[in-house]
Structure formats: structure tokens, C-alpha cells
Image (cartoon, rainbow, N blue to C red):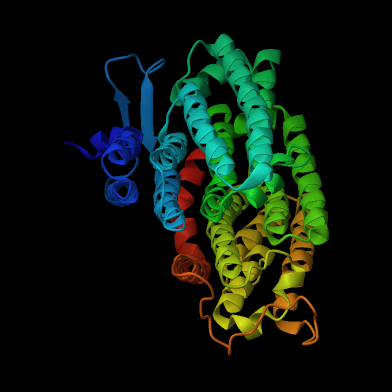
Length: 498
């Protein structure tokens, strides 16, 4: 077996294992969680093995079966997709650790399908199967959001389903236009075929516009963001952690992969209007998301709106088509996934210990739960872009790339993003540390320790959530200090594109 032979297993393992929780539920209900965790841990081991092979042997690629590559199931992993594959596997098992201990068979299967879909997006080498994997992950996400309690969860899942279906349909229409123009679905074959068809042809420009807008829905760029706050606020805590870390991150990966791996930087140079529209869309999303986050009163909604703003900045970095700016966008993409997943885990810990969900209820959090408050502060600092966090590294590269290309509007967007994120993230930290002691809705103190309150299950859940948040804070700081190493790891991909 060669290293490339492991690539089909990355998708096949969680996809086939999704049957196991259903079978386990028929034998013993308490086996469901164990079987799901075992499959997710196996996925982590496999993802790390593939990443290790990429580090030693370089990018891996294979085509499943004897179907011609133009129409077959091509799989490929390079330095960037290896990072995404590991991120999906680790977040998948970490978030599932916060799920209800009495997980049902269907819920366990949905978790594995979610991981399979996200992983498939990262490793697929053709644009149609990317759509298939987007739909697998999307359908699993809609159903998992619906497992939340009450009518709100059902309504949020329904809205998520409707909007997500529109986004996926637009993407598929774009793929159809690209296929009509080129006669192939393989990413490697599409790049030269699109150039031969003419970058400024109506078919090619329309194909990219539809694909970009479709993925923009998945990214939740303004004004395509309406599904995200409701879904993140109503979903169970474990699902919010998974989607907060991976939902838009994987869509962002798909956007950058198709923009540079399929349409290429030459397309952006040949059709500068596309670059201008992407910068404008990113700037609007940065401003609108930031303002909405400033006005949010629910912490989960605040974090959801902040993602709208943060991914607007990512879109600006992608549009610049400059090596330094693109490196910054990719570093920011990874850093945001870790920080946002950690922040959602922290909200789970706070809610389990105190019941607090609103920004106002986070008043005096540092007195009640000092460790949790410190973790929130570190992760919020990464969203702002303060050193030595990875958020700072991403914004630094973005700003430097914008200045080097003379894109002063983009540079201004980076600055505006920092100021806006300082406003909404700083508001949360200010409530936690500096709110007056007489505040009526301050969380109850417990003697200065992060001691659990309530039933044993909630105590265990709070401890696990805090551990995940602490781990995320450590990673945010470690990657921030070693951001040069991450940039060097991604350099072969960026250089190949630009």
C-alpha cells in the first residue's frame, strides 16, 4: 500500500462507519457513543498519518477505480488540505465529546457523516464531487442543528436548510457552466481548459460568479448570512462548536481552492472586475458583520456575526492574488477555526456552570470563573488580531500584502476589521473583568474557582468544554508565536498558485 492509497480511506472510514451507531443502538444504547468516538479517533489517526506522509513525500493524489480522471473520483492532498483534514478530524472528536452522553444512533451517524462531508471537501480533486461532499456535510449539519431543544432549533434548521440548498444549487449551476465550457470536471484538467475557453468568455465568468456566490452562502458573507446566527444560537453546544470551527472554514477552503486551483490567478488578472467585486463584498461583510456583532446581546449570536466579519476579511485576502496576502488569508482561516471553536466551547462551559448566555450575564465572569474568563480573553484577542496570537499573524500578512500591491482599500479594510473586532470582542472581555460588582445580572461567584454547579452530567460537560477551550487558547498562542512555520508549510501551495 502506498501513501496515496490512504486517501480513499479518509472519506470511506467515517462514511462507512456512519452505519455503526445505528447498528449499535439495536444492541445496546450505551454502545452508540463508544462506537462513534472510536470511529472519530480512528479518523484522527488516519488524518495525522496522511499529513505526515505529505510532510515527507509531498502532495498525494489518486483516482478511485478505473474511471477516467475527467469524470472519476479524484482525490488529492497537499500541504493546505492536509491542515484542513487534520483540523476536521480533531474538531470532530473534540466537539462530539460535548454531545449528550445518551447519544442516539441517528445522532452518532450524523456526526460521522458531517466529518465525512467536510473531509471530502478537503480532499476531492473534482468540482462535482466537491458539491456532493458539501451536500453530505450540509444535510448532516441541518439535522444536527434540529436536535436542539424547542421550536427555535427546528426553525433555525429549516432556515439553514433552505438557504444552504440555494447556495449548493448556485454552486452546482456554476459547475454546469464550467463543464459546458470545458467538457471536464477534474480540477487539474479544468485549469488549462478554462484558459483555452477564454477567461473573459460569458460561460467562464458566469461559472465563477455562480460558484463564488454559492460558496459565499456557505461562508455566510453579508447579506447571505441570515442562517448563521439562528443556527448557531439554537444548536446544541457540541454542534455549535463543530460548525463554528468548521462550517465556514471548509467553505472558505473550497473557495480558495477553486479560485486558484481551477480558475487560477490569471483569471482574476484577465477579469479585474471579479477582484473588485470580491474586495467590495468582503469589505461590506467586514463592516456589516462587525456592526451586527456590536449590537448582539446573545453571546453565540455575537460570535456568529463576528464570523461574518472575519470571513469578509478572508475574502479580501483571496481577492488580492498576492502571495503574502493569500498566505495571510490562509493563516487567518486556520486561526479563526481554532479560536472560534474554542470560544464556542467556552460558551458551553459558562452555560453549564452558570446558565449565562447573554453578554450582560457575563458580567463579573472573571470573579466567578477565572480560568474560563482568561481563556475567553485570549481567544477574543486572536479575533481582534493582537500579538502574539495567530489572529495577529494572519492580519499582519494580509495588511503587508495589501500595502505591497498598493491595494489601499484592502489595507483600510484590515484596519477597520481590527477596530470593529476590538469593539465586539472587547465588550465581552470588559463585561467579564470590569463590570461593576453591583451589576444585577452578574454570574454567581463560587469562591474564585471554576467549580461545577448542577448535576454530574453538566459538571462533566463543563469540564470537558473548558479543557477544549484551554487547548484552543494554547494552540492560538503557539501557532501565533510560530506563524512563520505555518506560512512556510503553506508556501509550496501558495507558490504553485501564484
